[in-house]
Image (cartoon, rainbow, N blue to C red; front, side, top):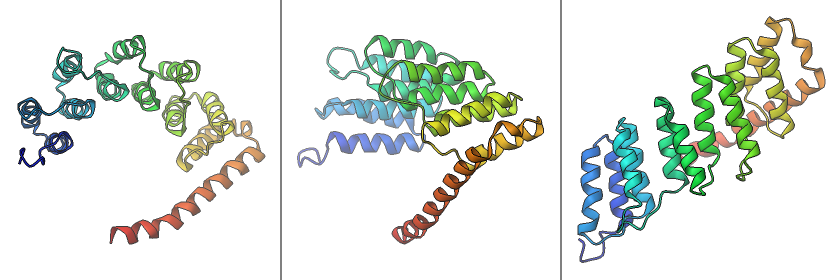
Length: 235
């Protein structure tokens, strides 16, 4: 197979991905290390695929080692934004992700939206809302070429509503809309219900509500148009 040129880096990387997806991490590791035997270059995507597989099964120590190994002589393959983001999204659960973010920035690797959102989701879910807000502001201030999106604001808005900080939830909803984004219908209704329960529904003016409701309806119509096409493609 190797002699015919069929055993290539993309082929082996795909095999690692399949093995990792099935939870066969030891087999994925063995396949990865055999790449050298077949004189195949281990590119960053192969490393990232293995790091992701290791994180999926909770083997964070080995995943971190795999990232460090990328800088060893002979590998010629440095970690990229995806390497760090994979680890950060996993390390958030064991509160060591901030170290990785600092290391990432020191190396001149700009975090992407997924990197920041990993922190925002984690802090929002663990009721550390002020830290989530701080991360949102950091995304805006660091000038890494990424801005908060719907998926950045939504966890914060939900967490604020759940903890009774309804005025702040309203403020973030308005901020999201002012950036030209339309919130999810559930998020919009959640803020409305929270404000109404707190007797502060008047903080959302009628014109603002109409604009959001029209945007939500328009998006639903678009989805309904696309759905039949997706069904045809899958047949």
